[in-house]
Length: 324
Image (cartoon, rainbow, N blue to C red):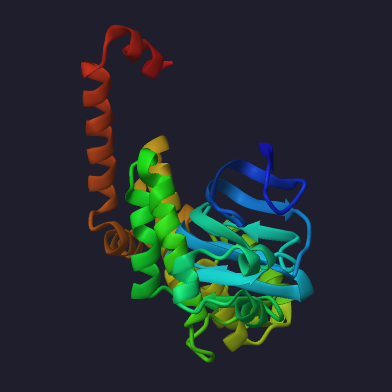
């Protein structure tokens, strides 16, 4: 299902997001020229369109899930929980965001630097936060991506746990803190690696092949030859996109699919093992326990026992619904 949201903005006549799945964006005007938007997405990808401006600073903090952002100039940035990117509004004016784990939640911040230069909160003036320097640092080149760290956690995490009635006052404090942090960020600070969009598109094709043919095993070398990408780049970019080394990711993916089959079918354990790519039931059971800490037989029994108890104890009307 595709859902399109048109969201009003201080800086653009129209902000449009086309989401393959479901999404929600909740925007607050924090100060004149500064907006903060809570967003949550469930699906595979989203496409964003808005006005392009080199004088608007965009900051995105990933609270949970994982996102890949293809921006202007063929640059691709991947963020995991706790990571942050800062760039001009021009970089993401017509951009695609993908969600490798199927979901993402975060906070985006927009700062009109021209307005900040003329109407600057007193605290920022005392901290010597200068709009011109922010523009020079973050809006004159490629996006900057910062890995999760204690400073970012301190700024952002309280915002998500605060009750809704106090969100705006807390946002006022935290956005001041964010701008002071960015203004003092030292050049050369550890940054996340950025990739070419072409590389990440190849990795998405490889991921599709691996996950659609679980009954087959492909080596890194075979995939490297098939997709004309060297093995070290394949492994590095796959981890950047999906957050785990390829072998670890596929082991967990196979087990997740097996869990679904154990819940939804009566197939024998050996048959399920074969369907998800294990030659023997013994190897499958070991991998399953490595990931879930229980054996497949125990998982199926525990699930069915819980389901049976829930159905038996449910009201009559709900029992009927559960059985249909």
